[in-house]
Length: 343
Image (tube, rainbow, N blue to C red; front, side):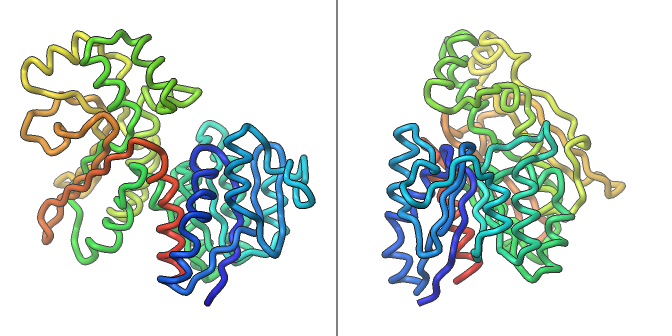
């Protein structure tokens, strides 16, 4: 039995659900993989908790669901201690970094968490897009120099193994085109508009169901899809794409009438992210709402589904889709990536 000591930074929708998974799946992981996943430290915006002998993930999940802070844990809680201090000082084998995405502030604090963990010789698993969008090459170089792994399958399309399939299962191929519907929120809002709801009603419904972020522009104006496209291009096409390379448009310019008119013509609007190799070898990166024909594989995606299609020179065209009615699949990517490192 091997023990993996885990630090978890970020106890929002994904973080506390990952704690639930550690509690629910712990015994099965031990039985199937001879691997003990031991949560030794956790941090949220109000403080940290750390115990080298292990924290109870189920208790932390219950605390967060009730609106509490991890620093409230008796004996082990430390109000005011930052996540970066925890990562810099605690002894662990793996950092699971699930803090909020913050592209507007240079990917911080997540970028510093990831850098520090890699420099200390910890493996890192993260669904946080910010560090990968802004410092993809730097972080991979840092991981290589310190002999550890950086896994980020949860950064694109939730629980869909888009990164893992693209990097592992398409080895030997040239990926000539990527098409993706990687943002759940925009697909949901477009479906509601098509059903006859107003923009205000659609946004309110999406916010009430936890689909829409506090800053809706990140999703609705295409930033989230563009960030995910940048990660896909770096990881799967091995090209140094940046956010500023993406020609970006969101769905806010569409009206409910536009969406319904497309439906009447047999077309379905999706916010489509594409990367295509041109004849000169350069890449064209674009995010825009597109009325897809009925025979397009993404026209059949449901309200909370996402998808990625890879067009390759030797493996043909491969389409992956995921149905994600709750954030559990996204949280579970941290478990998947952890097992991929240690098993």
